[in-house]
Amino acid sequence: MRTFILLLLAMIAGTQALHAQKKVIQLHAMKIGDTVLAGIPMRHMINHSAPKATFGDFRGKWLILDYWAINCPACIIDMPSIDTLRRKFNDRLNIVLVTINNEEQVNKLLQERKEVVKGAVLPFSLKDTLVTRLFPHRIIPHEVWIDPNGVVRAITDGDQVNERNIEGMLSGKITSLPLKDDFPKESTAPVSALPDSLFVGHSYLLKYRPGIGSRTGDQLDSVNHVRKLKLQNLPALSLFYHAFCSATDYGSNINRMRVSIEITDSALYELYGRPVEERGRWAPHPRHFPFLRWPDKDAYSKDMLYTYEFFSPENMPDSLRFKYVMQDLNRYFPIKGRIEHRKTPCWILVADTSAQRLLATKGGEPYYLHNTDSIGTRNRSFRETLFNYGLSRFMDHPQIIDETGLDPEMKVDFYLDMTASPYHDRKNGLVVNTPLHYQTAKDQLAKYGLHLHQAWREIPILVIYNE
Image (cartoon, rainbow, N blue to C red; front, side):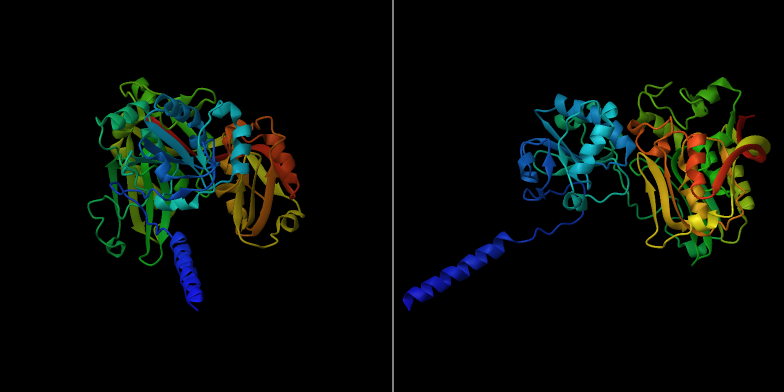
């Protein structure tokens, strides 16, 4: 009997120990000043000393978590420079690239874009929803700086991960960096505490707000009957461009060939209208620094990026909204914008009698497909397929004019394979980062009874000029 009791007690103790081992670590969104628990795991590591790790394994050195994804061109372009920084500060710093993508997807990307990655060998934490929950974000790259004791010291965007800041943080000469906040609780406008229901209309222009990224949005608040155009952390030319996009029937990403830069003052042209050399199209901001009087992107952003917001009644016509927005922008900036109707080369889309049948959706959850080879939609409207999610997302090409006569709200399934395009190059990332090749587009559209031809049409053009 005594033996049985001892055996039973041993079994109970073992069960309690097992439950203790399975204790779930309670996670919450962390902020600057919090300490990351040493036992939190990274379960799928590659290019690391072991296939698994915990935060405790990185104690004693600084750690930067670089959140990224395979569909983020900026993240991929930065990999060689991150690898250089990792090697330079190897004795004092670890850098781990965190992604929810799996090993097969990451390896495929690294192979397809090896010309961009340039042999960078970086530690990756893969399929990592656990560590992602620690530091929620909307925009990538997203950087978390953790000191040798596991304390979160900074949360920044990718531009802050540079040699100067790393040396400063490691040496203690820099104690804080601009906070990247992807979830701001309210606008920084002076009246931000007031509810939307009080507004008949207002607009404001703010200077650069570090840490929250660049965004655009045109939203309808049907409860309070207010429309809100918000253009966040953008250079002046982009404010004009996105205002123009919001006032047309051509979707949220109008081709930049519909913007004519006619700035005659050479100094203003350098600031606001510089062309991208390899394509001869305007670039909203410089790509390389130092530039003019600015040593780096941070300094440039403080002087040249703005946030603009315009509230208007729900029933205000788009033409009137656009008029008021342009009046605001023309009032505040040395460059000006106006709309002119000009006869312009366009690509005209027409449909034959089979188009409605060939495009008809088979149903299912709506989605938009874009990868290195193709674009497509399922169970989305024809208008979205053509403009908001489809053909207009490609780089430079003439404006596509819909003369199909099809219902723009008709739900369609649509897939274009662009691998035959002479512009196709996976090192560019998403296929929409390349120009849209006319003949390839024409061949692919024909599968759906859609036909593309070239013609001149009179269409609205945004003209940027100076007085």
